[in-house]
Image (tube, rainbow, N blue to C red; front, side, top):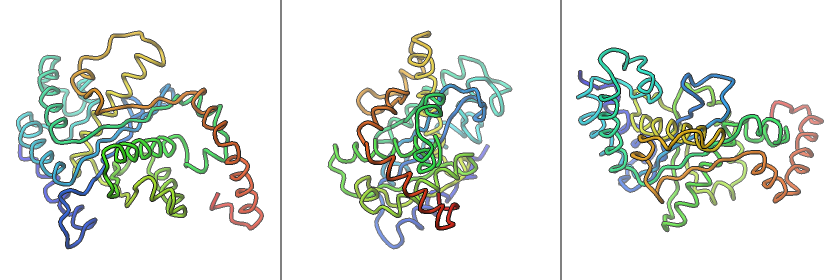
Length: 294
């Protein structure tokens, strides 16, 4: 099977982001959102946003290797990690646990060879709903916006640690239910240049996972981070660390951050004036008949 859905998609993205210049060392973070196997189940205990960051040159090499070493040899169109785990979708016929292990090892090698770092932000959904005040939820658009901003901060710290001065472009999976929250978050950041500069944010865009294959790598990372926190922290440790997680995660390179009620309360305590500021802002907008901007 010739996997051509993404032919030219990444090149087109780079051309639109960096017209007329050498872009091989520019940094792009590929994001995907993972809640649970279905991606929509309201009873999921945690929500997770995960991403890899790499230079444009690395993503170009990833894209070629992903097709040549993973997708085409295995007859896969879109690598969805939850489908592989449960043998659904493209993985329903002709797949078993041994083939799954073999393909995952191959996929992980391609990812680790062609990315600089992975970051995941995970939160306890019940704690977020019960602990975070309404004005703060609305500022970030909701739990996904909160998680995306956590990831952005993690990548900014990574860039500072590695003395990377340039900005980072962010690409998200199109069609995810969280798009509205992501747009809300970035639109808020546009109005605060100091936050945008401090966190090295340049642009954000959305693309289908079928066309923008680096998003499939982010899907694998998000899935493993979600499973790890669910099995080892929220309920656990109730299970050993997954073999697939051990194979994918690079110690000291790929990191996750988990937030629960204690985390949210500490953040509120560290910023005693922010809630009052947000409440005053909402009162002003409401009084000015601009509730749509809240």
